[in-house]
Amino acid sequence: MISSPLHLYLIRHGETEWALTSRHTGRTDIALTQNGEDEARKLGRHLRDIQFAHVLTSPLKRARRTCELVGLEGIPEIEPDLSEWNYGDYEGRRSVDIRKEEPNWNVFRDGCPHGEMPAEVSGRADRLIARLRTMDGKIALFSHGQFGAVLATRWIGLPLAEARHFPLATASLSILAFNPDHPEVPVIALWNAASCDLFKEVSPDTSKNKRTPIMLIKFSTDKTVTEVAKALEIAVPANHFGIMQIHDLKETMTKKGVDFTRQCKVFEVCQPQQAKKVLEQNMSISTALPCRISVYEEDGKTVLATLKPTTLLAMFNAPQLAGTAQEVETAIVKIMQDAISG
Image 1 (cartoon, helix red, strand yellow):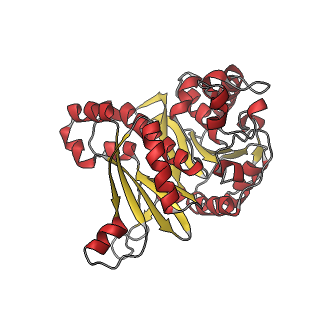
Image 2 (cartoon, helix red, strand yellow):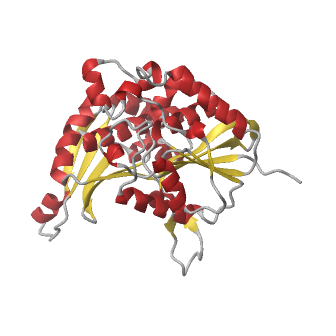
Image 3 (tube, rainbow, N blue to C red):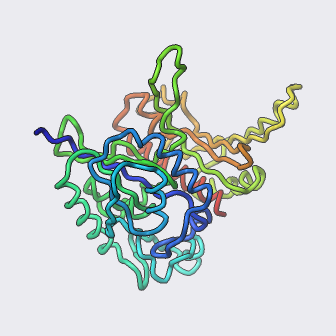
């Protein structure tokens, strides 16, 4: 029998109260919020038709509950190595508060007092990868944000410190696999895709049962549009980006005599050195610049959304700029997360 190539479907658990407020949640066994449960159910719609050879989950309640709500066939196996980083003395604290005491602290470099150190977490990821590589087919892994970043980093052979470039949203899907043209080369085939962004249905009268991928990064919060917009004005320069323009669509439409009642602000942001690097390689990419972060009302929540720079760049066939696109995407995600938690 011919074995199927190994594909690891890495799923971060749904939203929790601590995830919503950016508090480090290691071994505290916290439950999902109602929104977190809804996120898991939505993600399940895209995964239930996939035949998984194995389903593994962290023993922590938030991961096990996400696994249950996604609803894959078979009995999930508890895998302790999928547990989140043990934050020790930093459990329940926010990075921004820790850095008031330790300005240069980085969990991926410095670890946590009375918790896990980077070498321990890296060793745990390596041990799990060695086990997974004895398997084949599609494997579902229900895990956590920072351990998931470590797992991806070690999968492609990078030092653990590089995990800072791989943030994960709640209830997101990532896929770790191998390059089909070079089967010995591990790759990240998909990263940090939210359930609402995985597929958009094509009109059934033209392409029945077909789906086309779209790639948005979205976060939601109970804060108002005005509160998030003010937080973005702080978060953007704090992350070494500049604000080129802020478009208030409601205000602009009103001035044009258009009755538009929903709040929506669009921030055009740019990191000049990164933009210079990209444009020197391919001026046609200027059609996709600058990066935009939209803040708007939807279903009683305030949503922050942006197009994934990595996906936009892929349209221009410029693989040499993939690293730059990932750096920009990581920074944009951090800006959005800072605006929600700040």
